[in-house]
Image 1 (cartoon, one colour):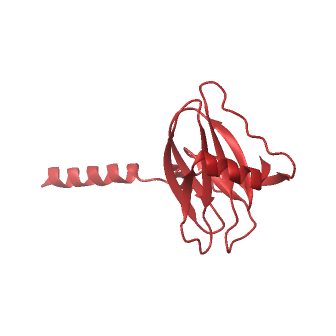
Image 2 (tube, one colour):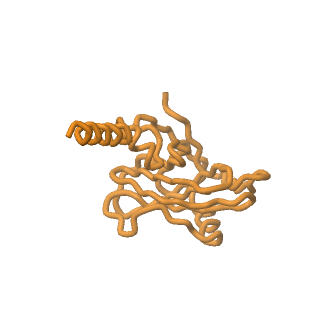
Image 3 (tube, helix red, strand yellow):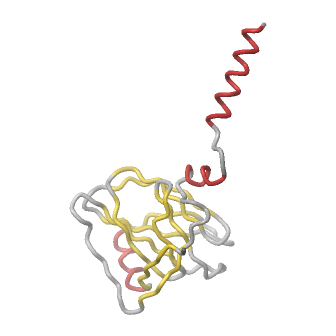
Length: 164
């Protein structure tokens, strides 16, 4: 009987250790970054850079179109547990990544979207962030190169900085 009780307590202890210890750990586990990190976004009206990826890297363009309803606030994108950027409606930005599987987390005004993509060196990828209030097809969507390039010409390029 004592052995059974000991095994039960041991199993319960292992389960507790395996559970995330905080909301921040849960967010990072989902691919998001730390909840309290915020960004300021700056629009560049006439600048629309479209660089090629550096050798051995992939480049990811992140596009946020306009939804029917939503706030003008920033939409953040996390990759493998770290925020990589933020944008607002009708904007885009880009970042480089090492090749491999990326765990993506997009956070809008009210909701989150999750997605996994595998990126290859030397290639460009175009993502559409579609999270917010009353969004029909909610999530992170990979666009074709043709559609991605069309949207980049239509939307404003932005840069962002972590708020201190």
